[in-house]
Image (cartoon, rainbow, N blue to C red):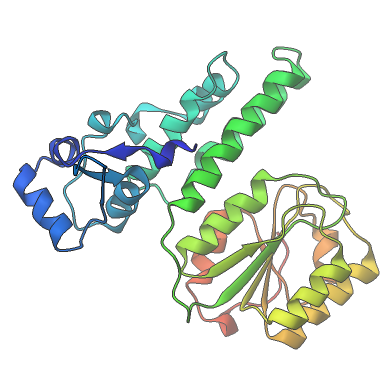
Length: 287
């Protein structure tokens, strides 16, 4: 079970928020904070709902330690990488939940902590400081954290615009598309993640059928798919009226000419900023 499935008592949450327990129970009664009842009749709040509440603002800043979480000022990407490469990498779950609860948005979380930490872990393996099994274990922990944060997102409105995320054929990485999906969800989109290693022809068919408002390609490996496949993908996006975003460490200048009209992003924070602008403001450019 994901850590975000943990439950918090009203008394514990009230202490963390610096509120009276009666105030918190009134918020629950008013529906401001979703809660469930145990078989014994005691109210409990899912940690995912607590994180959503804190992200939304309008409540006092929580004392995160009272919830078993970590404050954003207490951790760096170097420290996160050290935890991921240690014998207890699961502690990274608490760190990431604490950062998110402290108000860090998904794009900043990915750009400032997740990507640098995983790059450090990868370099540690390349240099022989950690084993390949430790690197795989660290990746697994990070995947658990991202899946948990995605589950904590509110269900989008039925009228929310659609978006699709994918890594093209030959790109096997899972983490980057998940980070993109989380950013799209936070931006109010109904995001579907097709995952890595998606054939361009299948993605074109999905775009034609779904006509999403946004298509996001995660490129971790340069040269994924071929010239003709990329050209067809860009054409499918233009025909469907979809904004095509492309980003990742494998995004090289030679890739964008094939994806005519695509928006190349150097970071997820840049992508998030662009998503807030009208579609007609942006044109294709290189990374």
